[in-house]
Image (cartoon, rainbow, N blue to C red; front, side, top):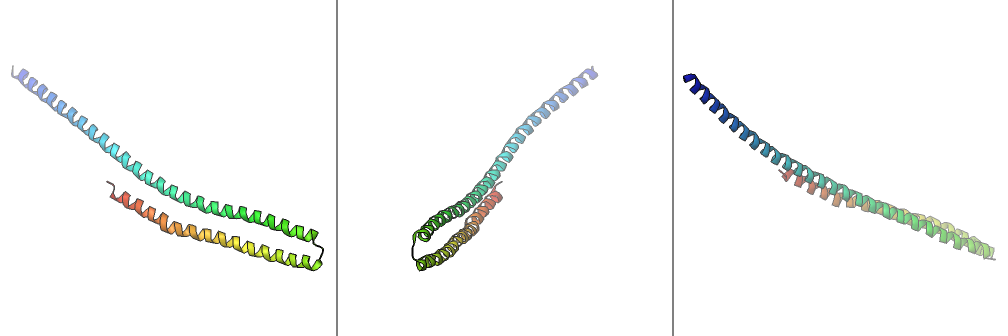
Length: 151
């Protein structure tokens, strides 16, 4: 009889411990899901900030490339128009002195226009560096400070 009572108590105690373990396991799984969700959310915010910074850098590079490409296109059109004009002067002018002067003007024109477009490209690069140091560095600092504040 004592053996049955001890066996019953042991079984009851085992059942209670098993139920407590099951509750603890369920609670731990729930907490783990919450923790995993917050970790994924934090990682998502970090990734979003990285993408924002990447987008800022790409926009700055796109702006620099657009200005540089635009300056090159305008320079080519300018050269074609100038060559056409000076070619017509050279072809139809009857005075040799006038043709000689036009050739000197053409050479000076090409040198000066080349210098002007070079200045445009140099200024564009300088503006890109300035924007990089002002805006991108500021965005990086803002993103880094937000990342450090995140839990």
